[in-house]
Length: 146
Image (cartoon, rainbow, N blue to C red):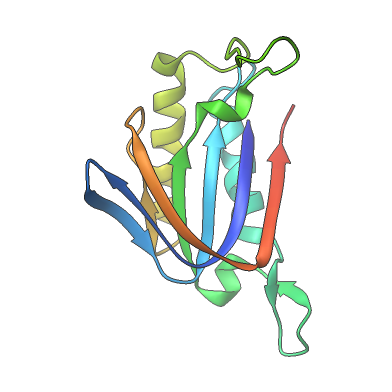
């Protein structure tokens, strides 16, 4: 599993001009699944996302988690995180998990996130999405289980 985590002051995702998810301050997370991922990959990722200490405390240090600050979580599926760019100029997506297997993992992540945290919004798996954000900091992190 791979994730690009961005601390944002606001973010939204749209499909065909319709806003389908938005958050105020919090985390925008682009998530991709690889061939080695399965249902057991979801809980550790969510634990990391909710517990990442990347929000400032009273002293201005990154010492508070999303849970502590009550920020929003916007989850967007992004298979291109598994692009193989080692040859040529056109990316290969062979390392990405087949969409039929990846979609239930993404949906499980969203459902579990909504069970454990609020507010949570998401993109639409497999859709052509437009993502808008205001990166705060900027703070952008990469998480990977591979």
